Image (cartoon, rainbow, N blue to C red):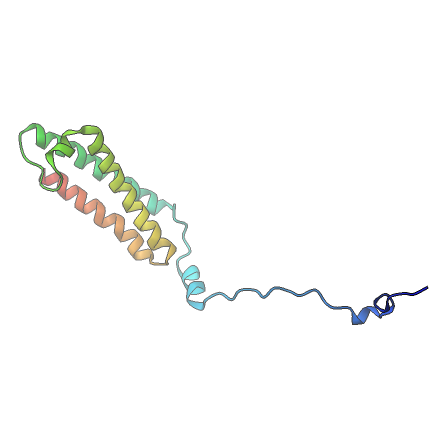
Length: 132
């Protein structure tokens, strides 16, 4: 009988299973995670996003009140504001864009800009509502 030579080789000659290399983490990314490792939906962001939504809601109702008094809208067309459903969708989309921008800043490690996005948005929307 003929046997294959591979069957009679010592076990120490067997080839080891290759191990995949582990990816190295960037030192800056590790430092960012250690310095400010907060979750995106933490308490501070929740309040800031609620404030953004509230200020946009205030702007929505103050703009409608302004249009009822016969004043002209300066940022949007009057037709967009007079269509209440479309105007509500524009205000909601503005809030969503603000949260999305904050998320992008969060993912890239710009946590101060993440917070300031909402702060500036709240300030601008509230100023617009007061102006109305």
